Image (cartoon, rainbow, N blue to C red; front, top):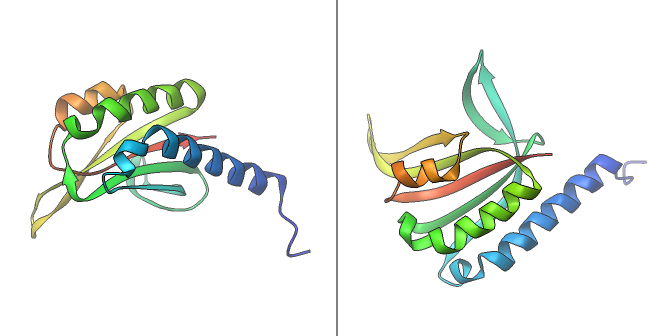
Length: 139
């Protein structure tokens, strides 16, 4: 019995594969320029109403685009926005995280801002020094 896959697990694996294939097809130019794509399930950890962190889990499907030395919004917007808009019409994108290189109280590091509104708000406030962008899809 331990090898039987539940219907929910099968649907989750199929959705993950579908999203990965879509992103690889629509972001191929970026992937050819050493950007990395990660598609995985996450669970949010909260304290009261405050989000503390996102952990590997099974609540939300997270799609992350990164580049080793970071990037600017202008480097990706021509490819990322059309792909994001198509996905947002088909799926329930509940949040976008933008992780940026910067300074923390302990020195060089990174900070993450979360957005629940339009992606264009992200563009206006986070133009450069981006370490990665993740958007989360709720099934």
